[in-house]
Image 1: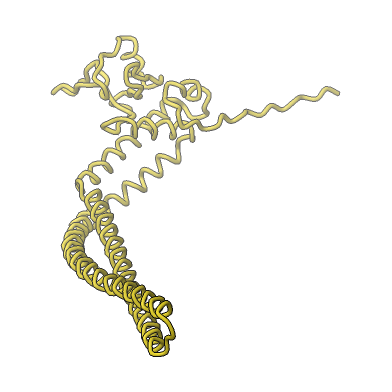
Image 2: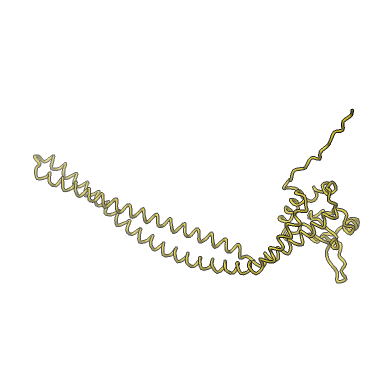
Length: 278
């Protein structure tokens, strides 16, 4: 008895470098019709345009907030570093003070020995030790004085840094409040748009969605799916790509009008759809 071999379709892995040009065949092989997929892509692009408009209302505020947060964080790190320097100078002072006490004790001991010396060589040797101890004491005192001066300088640095932190934190708070106000005023609309976007995205296969996202992010106007340009006062559309404005040849215009073929601009790689596709 002959057995029939069951064939399974191998799924092509998603390639993040793919464009719509490389997806022509998948459009034809996919169970979802080209026309249906084009409608979904057009709707997804329209939704993304509306989301972009809401984001544009925020202007440069998100970048300004991020920049201020980074600056405040850097200033606080600098403040902490200066505090560590001050702690180091204080430690040097304490160590020098302890050294002076030890040196003074040794000096007293040597001076006491001078009363019991028996010859000039021993006298000279002890005096030499006292001189060395005195030199070391002077160095320790110099360390204390220089450390105190450095601490005063660093404290002035702390005051300047703290003033700057206070100013930038106030700026940051104002910018955040401004941004929060805008986000709050558009949150309901944006939430609805994001839900709609998720709905359209779920209807597309991974490769098509990946290509759409890649082209959208690589273009200055974030358009991956466009219609013909320009649109006349009578509602008719022109013969140019709505993304790069290069003229489309007549045969491709016919294909676009049918809404049943995947037409990609040979200049910019965007999909061009029938404006009445919905």
